[in-house]
Length: 112
Image (cartoon, rainbow, N blue to C red):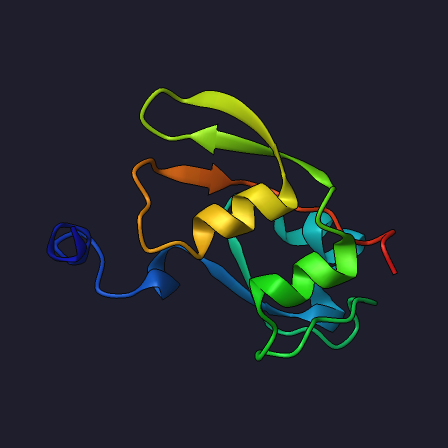
């Protein structure tokens, strides 16, 4: 797959816009437009706090709670599979995965 992509692009920089967090704001988006994916190289100025690189899925489970309902996509059928965060993490960390499951989004901003 990567060879296929590299046959069209030599670098992701050809299709993304790189911005510093302090420059990613409404006035700049209105001025430059928002027609390419944005890679934020430095988060300073965004007003967000990122977890450490060492965070694990079990850490997230402890912070958010194992009973949190999450919407998971079963990839082959493209069907929605409701499950708890604990069920998804147990599956995610299992060596015997028989399905392809995708957790698209996990909102945790109001959990602390």
